[in-house]
Amino acid sequence: KQEVTQIPAALSVPEGENLVLNCSFTDSAIYNLQWFRQDPGKGLTSLLLIQSSQREQTSGRLNASLDKSSGRSTLYIAASQPGDSATYLCAVSLFPYKLSFGAGTTVTVRA
Amino acid sequence: GAGVSQSPSNKVTEKGKDVELRCDPISGHTALYWYRQSLGQGLEFLIYFQGNSAPDKSGLPSDRFSAERTGGSVSTLTIQRTQQEDSAVYLCASSLATTGVSNNSPLHFGNGTRLTVT
Image (tube, rainbow over all chains, first blue to last red; front, top):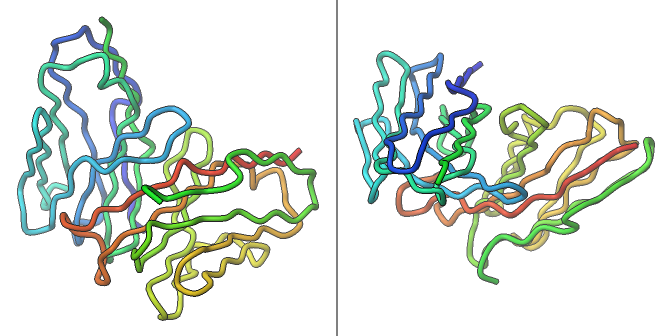
């Protein structure tokens, strides 16, 4: 069974600081890895998806890397803003449609 | 509609009662997923529908849980004889791709139904 772990569980930083969120998974035979954002009382919003053949994806201030051999992914958020405050979830799939999620990292960016 | 719609947004029920949760996916999305999010835990896969294919029900936690998708669109998740451990947020998602999620077809989630069993 795929186990997905996210560290730290919570993170508080001052505005402008870079954020580094970590995700590890136990089975390296993944189909893809995704990072999501969840705001309180809301569903999930897809941020980045990295296919198993890729090593990173970038979107604006967000960059996600993937190291399949070590079972790790890192999400970097540059120059954090208060609007980045949310819970960030990592999910990996062994099949195209079945995702295994981590418990998330709750981020607070202080103005 | 513009996004995935779930109803009700909140449901409080007594232990032992049956509940039905509804999901309206984005129009044209062939794939539909149900996940459960319990307090302090990651999302748990429940069931996956893809077009007219037989659904993958491998994530349903017990035979009290069932789901159907009518006409390839709206889906209903039914929980019979609810238990307190069923309390969670039930999330529905849909995607366009017929071969799974890709960069061109990410998962779109609804806001969920918060179920509380008293």
